[in-house]
Length: 130
Image 1 (tube, helix red, strand yellow):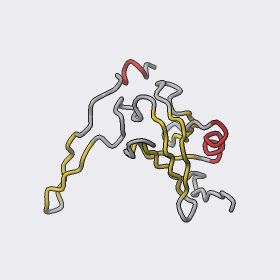
Image 2 (tube, one colour):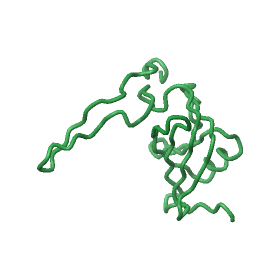
Image 3 (tube, helix red, strand yellow):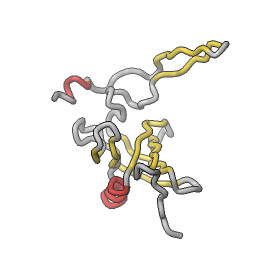
Image 4 (tube, helix red, strand yellow):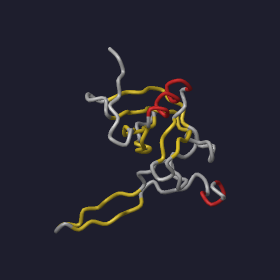
């Protein structure tokens, strides 16, 4: 059976990335065809930044890299799941995961954010100097 990803109108597929050992959700990002091909060819995670409109290899600026252990696709082939060996932090904020805030539902439609697993593994200001 062929892997034939279905890209959206912007030429992207959603990518959910989890830690291969713990199962923690690390991040949700997007991949274009080139990012997907480079990920498959190199075994390292490549993504497409919608805000920068650019291809990027995870860790190229921060050194916080992801080695792909397994790649899966969903039933429609319009989303990808990467199980990775995370070296350092996955989040650009310096945290292990981008999902470091819990949404507490306060009833009557209200909600608030609570920090969980929010310790920083690196200082983003020092790493991403521009």
